[in-house]
Length: 182
Image 1 (cartoon, rainbow, N blue to C red):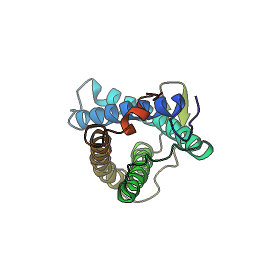
Image 2 (image 1 turned 120 degrees about the vertical axis):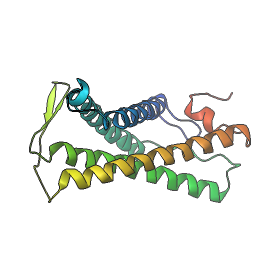
Image 3 (image 1 turned 30 degrees about the vertical axis):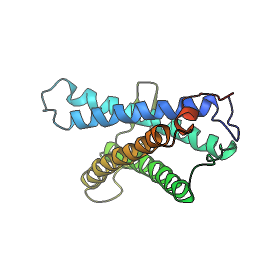
């Protein structure tokens, strides 16, 4: 279940892939719903679903950060150069920052009118109301371009994993898939 210096634990692996699926799903839903017309049946349901899933993602990301803090991290593989280690670390930091930034701007969009965010009818995330002029427009602009940026960072992340697997022929990708070398 837990990480070791050689391998990721199943909890880390599960959360990694769950976050990946949710981020792709939220990006696709967000991309689709911006073109919905007022009379489209999904005009209200799309944003409600997007907000609820976004709040669930926020909870999962907090758990992920806590696990990262309280668990040992697998060591980089011996064939990774210092440059690769630094770039990998930087891309991970950028991904975390962008994901939390997107969630914060999404919250600001959703609560600008003073309404709470209802999460699948289970609980509400309270609104802090309007905190600045044109909050929904400014946060919406930032949310959109941060979402594009996170997708670019995810592509870099995936390309690096594939590069390590195909060109470097190392276990970088296999470790995040749960493969245990004997």
